[in-house]
Length: 367
Image (cartoon, rainbow, N blue to C red):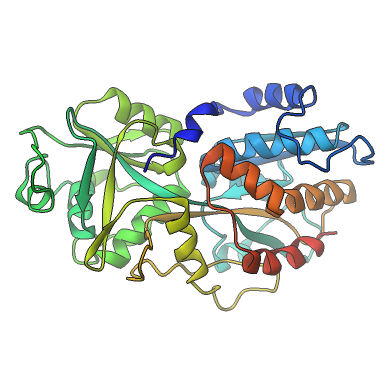
C-alpha cells in the first residue's frame, strides 16, 4: 500500500527552507488544531535539528503550532539523526529528532550543553513509521522478500534481479537479468540503524555486522545523503533498491516482507502494532522512554522494519525560556491533534493512548 498522501507534502531541504515554511505558517491556519487561537502567551524562537525521516511531520507540526502560537518561530533542520544529536549535545539546538534513542553510554559521556548541569535528558517516541524497501525495476511494482534475501542484496552477495533466491519468492513475476544497485545512506543515519537492526535480528547468518548507523564501505553499493537523497537515487537509477521512511515511497516499487509464513506489506497500522507489542528498555530513567523493538515477532499483521523516531530535550534547561516552548511544542506533537496532523501529512502511525500516557509525564517534567 502506497502512502500517497505524502506526495502532497514537499521534502524539506534544510534549515533555510524550513525558516520560510515557519514564516508562511503564521499566515495560514489550514493545518492548525481546532482549538487554536490568538491568546497564547508564548513567544520566542525554537531551534531543533535531526532526523530527516521526521521532515514532513515536522513541517506539519511547525505549521500547526505556530498558527496556535503566533509569536513563536520554530525551525527544524532535517540534517539526519547523527548530526541532530551532535547539534543538540553542542547546545546549538534546543531539541533533537533522532531515529534511535541515545545509548546509555552516550548519555553518561555527555555533554548536553543546552541542559542545566547535572540534569538528565527527556526522550520519547514521537513518530512511528515503517521503513519501506523501495526499488526501481521496469515492469515490476511489488516484490516479496524474506530477511536473508534482503541481507544478501544489501551486503552485495546477491547481485542480479533474477537471482534464484528472489525468483523463488516471486512466482509469476518476470525478473530481468539486470544488475542490482543497492542504495544506502552515506551519512550517519538512524534509518540505517533501524534497518540494520532488523537484518541483524532476522538474518544474523547473512548480516554479520550488527545494528549500525554508518554503512560498511566494504559492502559497496551507492551512497546518498539523507532520506531525500536515497529516494532520488532510487528514482533516477536503473535496477536500484534502497530503504527509506515509507512516507517517501511515492510511486516506487515496494517490498512485502516475510513475517512467519506470510508476507506483510508496510502500513502505519502494521508499524504501530510492533511498537505496542515491544517493551521499554531496562535501565533507563523515568523520563527516558526508549523502546526495545521485537524485530522477530511473528504476530499477525506486524511489519518488522519499523522506524521509531524520538524527540530529545532536557529535563532542565540552562535557559528557562527554552523549557517553556519545548514543553508546549512536545505536548502538541504527542497530542491526538498533533499525531493526526502528522498522520495526514506523512502517513505515520499515531502513537497509542497507552504510549501517550507514558510520554506526557516525561514532557511535564521539563523545566
